[in-house]
Amino acid sequence: MSNGTPAWFELTTPDLHASLPFYERVAGWQIAMSPAAEHGGYRLASAPDGEAVAGIMTGQGQMPKGWSVYLAADDVDATVARAVELGGSILAGPMDIPHVGRFAAIADPQGVMVNLIADTRESAGSPFKQMEGGAGTGHGVWIELATPDPDAAFAFYGALFGWTKAGAMPMGEMGEYAFIGAGDAPPGAIMSSAATGAPARWNWYVEVPDIDAAIDTAKAEGGALLQGPDQIPGGAFSANIADAQGYQIGLVGHRAGGQ
Image 1 (cartoon, rainbow, N blue to C red):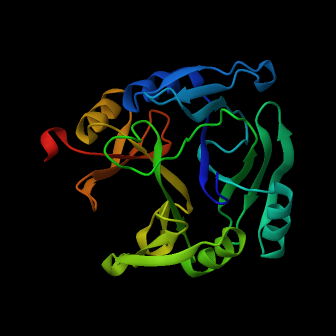
Image 2 (image 1 turned 120 degrees about the vertical axis):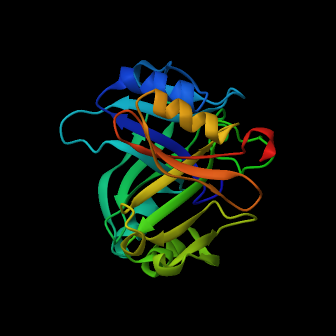
């Protein structure tokens, strides 16, 4: 997995048993207990193709809740050290996760948290897949950073992972939606949280087979539609929802009948 590639997605929730059926029905995941006893009841969510794409865990007290994004790091310790040199800070680690690899959590210079991981498992799979013809159904297909300073974010993540600004889509008074240049295809985009009013955070999008059906299911399961559905290049639609506990996640999918 290339340095800087989205590598894992993780939900921390105070109500594990309410979250599991919500995502099974909305994202079409199969969710099971991690087979590793050391993971302490950690749940693994698998896409319809059988590959694990996300983890779900219980979080209590002051532990940050909601979805977080993991980016692949060839050398977690060196990447953390470089992040600190660039004005970031260490939130957790670096540390080893039994049966997985090496992990750390950092905050970038704008205070936005992101996780780093060097996954050493031969069966790690591909939690992130570029959206193409339904091949990524149930997988992460896009990541998105809302930050107070997009230019500074590009400089920081560019120094860590070689990201560049690969074009942008103007959004009028909300600034621009700037694509992350990383390899053959952009994994996501960066936008201004100040201009858009979006929370400063990393967000991610899971591919669903029918965007309207997924939104309706989310509402029926106690969630809410936050934005969309909006048509995106290629004919699919994107939306942001809140789950039944109020945690945001993005959805990407086509409409029934190709509308």
